[in-house]
Length: 167
Picture 1: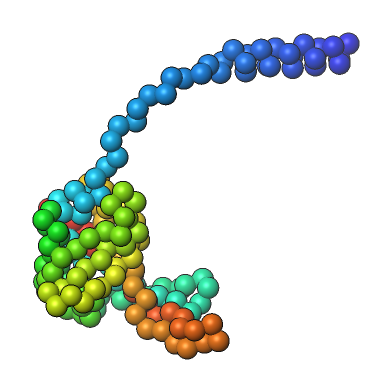
Picture 2: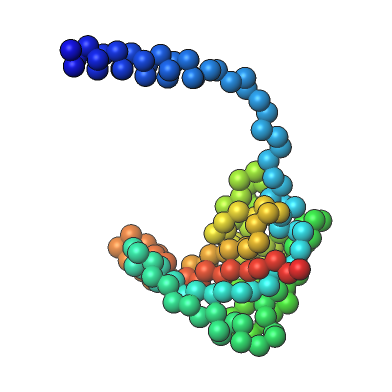
């Protein structure tokens, strides 16, 4: 009797599952967010800075934000829709050229911002997150120092920079 009851219950669940699943029409999800619009909508000001041990697989970090944010002189970046940028250096180490042009490595799914100064020197800034208009932070990562190993140059020291949108 118990096995018959179990089969009836299982059959009931199967019928419910099959009737509950209906095929949806393919509906458009809309245009993707513009990554450029998100980057150029406002100026960015440094909020957090972390020193990263790139040689360690777990990449431990040390917060050194106070070195960059202890005064009103904070690093600020301004990206323009015409593909130009300007940097106002603040306290702390500045990784960026003063001005030039910017571009994403891929406009639809950017992983890096490429900054080219007025003399043609490129600075590649890997992104640590998206640049949509809805994102309040711009995160950039840098591997600044490297050392020789059997496998060639390996990153030893890096920085993770977090910028907030200026309102």
